[in-house]
Image (cartoon, rainbow, N blue to C red; front, side, top):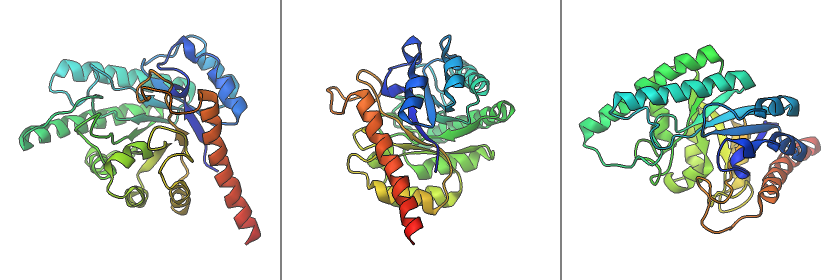
Length: 286
């Protein structure tokens, strides 16, 4: 069974003291892994010890908010972004994280129409920055996983195919694709076809299981059993991570449309564990 994880954003809007106590809670619920929302490059005091004591595997998700953009035309912005991302890698190495994922190649909220020549320059800045980050990531023992975002969050790369092209252009073997079903619901013509293309590429190295409304796996309009069957058919062995958001955080709704955080986490984990249990039962009865 794949490691089943959850992002701390399910309970807290940012990486800070409010995250303390969550590793123990997540482990007690039955998750295998915790994903840290890296709104800061360093952890609050005590969180690293809690993660170690919990026995949870760890992944990191970059928070590419205002002022963080490796594809920005201003060299000073690119330099400070690289410092932030390198800090995330340093933190990841300290807590044994396997992956730094997210839209690392762009700044969140950057949406603009560019002429083809400038679009190509922006793309090249992203590729050049990610190539350098990949070299640093190798030294820290952390893989990179680049996530396509929907059109309301960025204009740089919105589909799995676009990010796969970027991964190819970067040309480093420790860089892969981060597939998020929430963003795919908004941007892909065919969610299952896009996922199959990602799996066939051999470059899928992180997976966010999110409903179309940012609910838990098992909820919403995503064909969850078909998605999971495809992941298993292609031998995907990486983390399957819930990325849900407490009210007031990045992708939360304006009103409470989901269960309270503990209940939402439990619902997602119940579906995922139920899927794997059913799969084992079918194999045993064959």
